[in-house]
Length: 119
Image 1: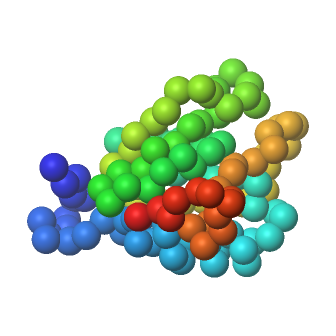
Image 2: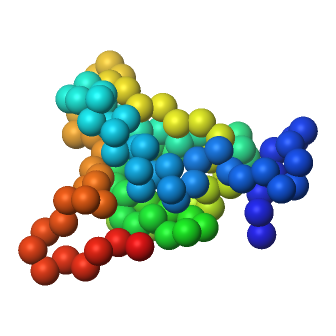
């Protein structure tokens, strides 16, 4: 089931889809360099999600881990977020007083020996 924004046609694609995260996102992260230590997804349900690990990028959704609200630890729980929920990304430096290391993402072109290619 697709999620649509108010005022858009039902045929519109989500602004950030798997193709974006598998291609353009790598370039954006590379340009941001070492200052890009925080990735926040703003969701159409009014919440935001601080990503600490991107686990998988499927065709219709992403599988990610987020930071716990109470601290700087990466949560063990997996979150499955449909791309249609994401309406804005924020990629930037950590806020004051944070000890978070940042988010982790291995571009699709860089794989460890023996690892299979992502779809």
